[in-house]
Image (cartoon, rainbow, N blue to C red; front, side, top):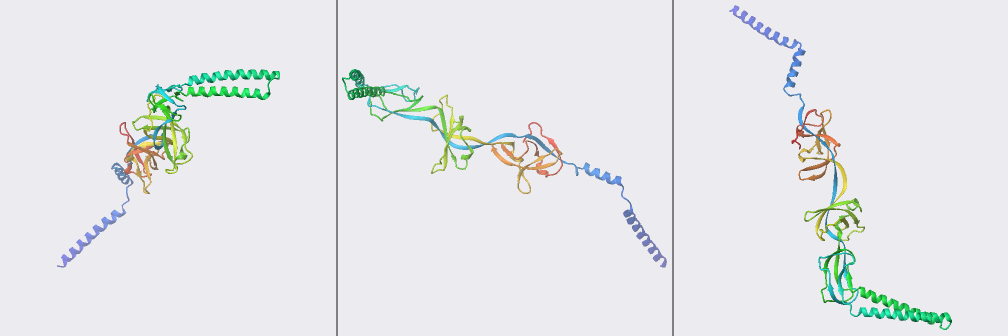
Length: 366
């Protein structure tokens, strides 16, 4: 009995000593540097410390213009309603509606109605008054005629000459002609009509150049000036280019807008008045980059920008502003003229993080 107790106590002491010697040996054993390096190398091989791969694209800025966009309409450069300056019956209609005329071309003729005879009579009266004046001057020089009589003869001669001029003008007014080259937009008389002075005979429209007229708000009028270039897209899809020839100085009392006239060439005579147009006038030019909206992101403070990679393969967040939008992308400003943009993987990296940039291949551009 006593012997069994002694054996049990000795076995317990041996177990305790073995356990204690193993723990203390493990704590006191120095770490092998080679083993730690191998472990670190193994971790790197597993991807825990290797930079993230991102696809990048090198972009170069292009000059882009911001346009002031106006709604407007086409309008003739000038037009005039030709009016009769004498009375008479229409005896001949030469130009029809839609006909193009040169300056001085006759449109309508009126009946002479005795004007030729009146002119002959007036010219004969001038000859008579000239003879009377010559005789009075001769007698005055000889002292047989008073100075007042000579002056009276001179006055009658001048009146006769003036009457000839009046009748000649009246004769000329029987032919109603175009004051400038253009097209006959309307003609208000027909053969046989009787017209009085002031009656409208026809409207002539100058076709070249033409105008595209718009109205600029009081906030934007300071952005444009005469001589600036502009482009107008007409309702039919045709595009015409020209220059601003006039910007109003006084705003419309109702709309508070200023009239603006864009002068465009119309050598082909295809433009018509009253056609709706969209007018674009470049008012600002900047260097901008074109990219997909999917590449835009926000930083932690909600600032809009893109993630780029610098020359050390480190991510940089660049704030940007949207300059213009297009159906297939956006033009942004705020980037350097040449920049490398992350196109794939930007959502997995942060500013200041080292990455492994992989250039895009042809056809992969975003």
